[in-house]
Length: 137
Image 1: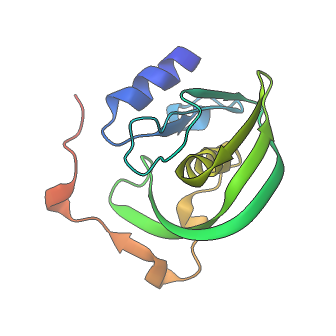
Image 2: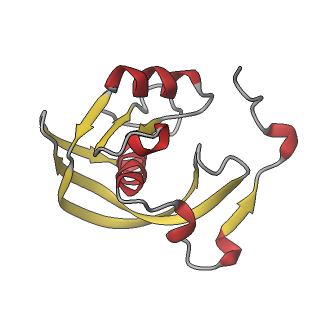
């Protein structure tokens, strides 16, 4: 299943994370890899998160997020700037864009979407259809 998550994530344009529930698996597993994204100033490479638990979070930052589950929109979401989390494989310290991506995937494990995190309807933005990636076949 982890290989399926990684392969699916890497096959989707601009995708930096994917959670098992997004591919129909009802388990607490997610993958994140922001290493090739221009917004990632620091990263841990490929993260495999199995039963992850946030043990510390610091700072708050509002940022725009997209989601494979909601391809036609982006949303302004407040997230912690820095995280420490414990996964069955390791303890992870994450900051910046990577911390945002990790929190986004952890939300999927709890059935939460970016629409559940917006402060108002004004925080939801329709993506320009001319800039949408073509569906993968």
